[in-house]
Amino acid sequence: MRHAGFSIEKHTGIRVFNDYMSQQARDNSDESVLFELEHQYCRMPVYRDMGRYIHLLAKRENT
Image (cartoon, rainbow, N blue to C red; front, side):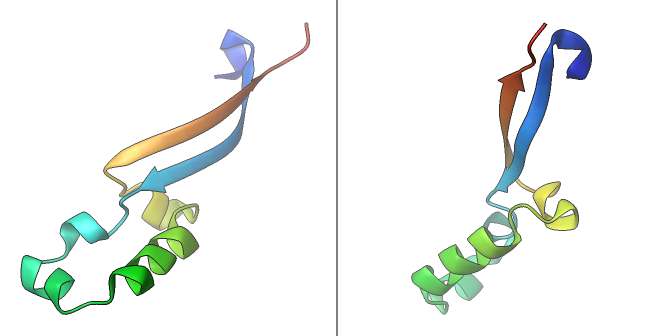
């Protein structure tokens, strides 16, 4: 993105493992614990890149 005049400030994966769990596993898990785990791993590249959605926070570079 640098060539477009932006730099990446944050790169986050959304739903990095929840969507890959079986329904039974989700039903037997504490939703708040799953949310905390998603938040903990969402910026680690190996997990971030598996996310269903990708969120980029970009900043326009001064020219």
